[in-house]
Every structure is written in structure tokens, then in C-alpha cells.
Length: 291
Ligand SMILES: [Zn+2]
Image (cartoon, rainbow, N blue to C red; front, side):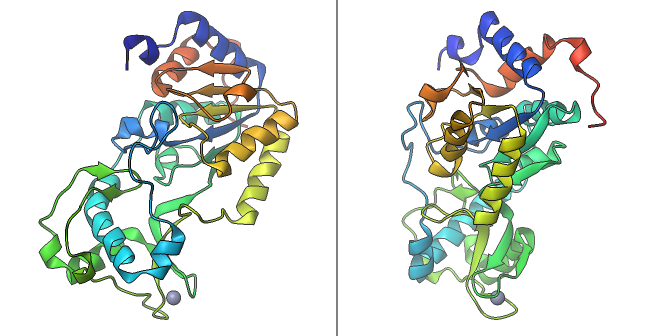
């Protein structure tokens, strides 16, 4: 990463400022690049390729007990830091955009809840939330924090382990006998428990997509922040915006899958670009916080 890609040029920032000022109802789509500044790693390199082994699929999670044990053992370690992550400047800037009445909705591909922690209220968690656990049988939902305590109680010998953080609250534990890791079942029905997130290979609930589509129809432009849009569930909204002739701007370090659909692309650190765009946003455009 060179300083050139970290800090946007003055002309880029001016173009982003103009884009925000010219489109008062933004459909904001965010991805992992928003949360790397909070210490949560992402999956993709600058070309949008995998940096690491792809995440576990729903099929593997449901089909194999050892895969589930491995997932939860790694999550036991990863959650300690993930669950304490705090919002950064990007989350704060987007919360401020909403407070000024400029955001139709914020659709996030992140599962960390950091937009809400920063004060954004109108958020759709496209891929769910990692701070909730759901039962695959009875659909009962419960807090991840309580599940963490249950995992700890059942697996005291695993508590001393540590590993580097991986994306989505995962940690790089390897080479252990995961079959010996004990995972509690649903307290109500005995069903399999799963984090309340959309796994790789799993479909986003239809109702959630339709809710986001309705907001896109009401918006006059799309702003992508910190996403390569490599996953179709996010890319589909860029395609829909393009079909509806709504301009799309993206702030992202590296390539996005929608580069050919963008009217404005800023290859820069998200927080830096948004902060600098705010500095020059016309004062008369502000103060619409009652919206
Ligand atoms: Zn259940």
C-alpha cells in the first residue's frame, strides 16, 4: 500500500463531495473495508481475490459435526476481540451522513454491528449479525455473549488458546483435535445452533433483499464504501442501481466487481476519504438532522 492509495487526491475528494451534495438520498452499501480500521480483518486482496481459505459453507456446517466444532472452537477465540471491536472513523462519518438526512438506508455486508454502535439507525444487516445465535430447527434467537459463556463452561481446556484474528470473528486455530470441542445444542428444542449470519453458499432471506430494493428505488444514487462487491448478494444492488440509471460512487482500496458501472471511483482509505469530503461539503447542505 503506497501513500498514494491511502490518501485521495484533492480532485477525488472534491468529486466525492459533489456527489454527496448532488444526491440527497443515498443508498449506502458497506463492506469489510469499513471495519478493517476497527481491527477486523477482511477476506479479499486488492484484486478482489481470496486472501485466505474461503469461509465455511452452510452445507459443511450442517453436514459435519467436526466442521461445526472447528467453527465454534475458532469462534470461541475470535469472539473475545471481535465482540469488543469499536467503530472507527468510517462508521462515524456514515452515521453523520444519516444524521444530516442524506441516507435513504445503509445496507451493510458486515456482521459486526459497528454501524449501529456508531449511531446509524437505518441499517439493514444484509448478512445478519454475529452477536446473535439462532437455532436451525425452531429459529429461536439468543445473544452470542451468553453462548460464549456456555462454550467456555463446556470447554475449559480450550480457554488458554490464542490465535490471530481472522474475518467474521474467526481465529486461525489449526492442527487441533476439534472433534473433542463440545458445542451446546438449542436449549429449547435440541436443534443445531448457528451464528445468525448468512454463511458462504447460503441465500440472503428474500424479505431482506426486497426491503433493500425498496430503499434503492427511493434513493437517487448509490454510495459503496469499503466493498469489492465480489459477493453477488452485494453486487446485485450495484447492477440494480445501474439498471435504474442511478449513479454509483465507490470508495474502496482496490478493484471492485462493479468498476465498469461506477460514475466515480475513489481508491482510498474510507475514513480518510469521507472525512476529507465532509470538510468541503457545503455548509448550506448541512443541518437536515430532523429527517
Ligand atoms: Zn431450537
